[in-house]
Image (cartoon, rainbow, N blue to C red; front, side, top):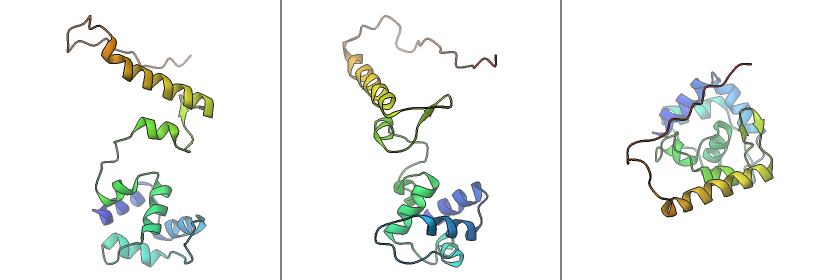
Length: 139
């Protein structure tokens, strides 16, 4: 699964093997004392060689995916919002960058909402939900 996912990520971003090698070499990783090459990455994509833990971590950081996703353990679309809000990644909402305080407060709101669900009454039928209009006006 790893070779297929790596190849799909690289090709999906229209990156050559050489460009990916250069990008990985620019990452400062403790314990990594060698450089990556295009042929090395090509061997990973073909399943001829297996990258080290450090290399997989660099790839995951570069492509902004988890190591589990690269290894085939999880799907890319699964995100834990709690971990995402508490991570060091820059987050934005409607193109507005969220400050650390914003992130913390939104995390608290979601956490409070989920923990409060059990204490709220159920006024609606089980399968009826109010629709939220997410269409953005271009004014």
